[in-house]
Length: 330
Image 1 (tube, rainbow, N blue to C red):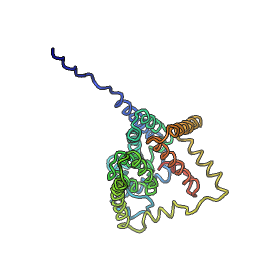
Image 2: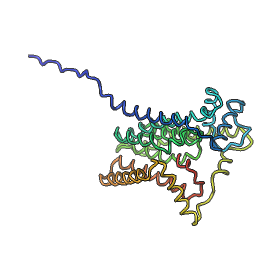
Image 3: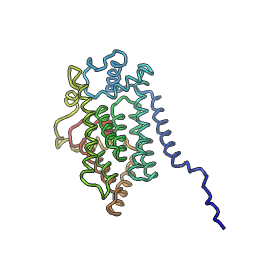
Image 4: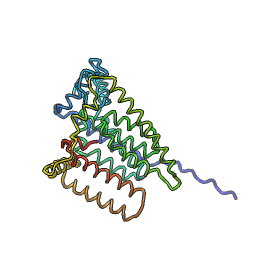
């Protein structure tokens, strides 16, 4: 007798792996679109950024020569495009950041899934971001931070996927959106190398990836600097440094007040002191569990993310930057 052929499983694949992230992203986007309906006028800086974008869209000042610029140009061009499509309104000025913030939820899910190969971790990260009062508050604004955050997440994702040239291009877009957000380059490199490295790698493998990243990043930065040189009267890099960088560490009498200010702003991450406390405890327990498990890729990724987060907060605490809440966004 011949064996009967093995039955082919024709049942549909479960949809949950696709439906869950889609649901989270749609909820996150819906919450951000709702923020567009809030009756909130522009912050003075938002009004300035919108006015500078309008110089591009309605007055043809493509190089922004008629304004003192202390920010790179990418977000202004995107806002100008929105003005051309929707008209010169607050809605049109805020819509791009709403869309970028919503897309960031999707990118964060993909990044966490790539780093940890665990859909539950990815869903938890995306949920925290989608419902974060802090990000919701800044989604419907014209500040440059939202778009810089999106490109940081994209760069981390592509580095973690071993697509280093594309990660470098995303790094250049970070610079074109918010130049000082290049602070995140060490994290991008660390996550990418840690996710992809294996025992057969040599220093040549690492160097090849870093050069691909650095080449694309340098080319993009050169284009932005070339744009800056072609305009006048003053470089946005020069003016941005003059206006935004204090050039000193904090004084002894500022230690407590600045720590209190940043701690108060950190409460907006979840909007609840209780939830913030639970989140901190959960992070500590998670890191301790990773150390107890021994040397693992996931534990190394956890340590890098937590360590960079602490360094980022210390940077803003110990250097005398303004204690603006939006500075917690990249």
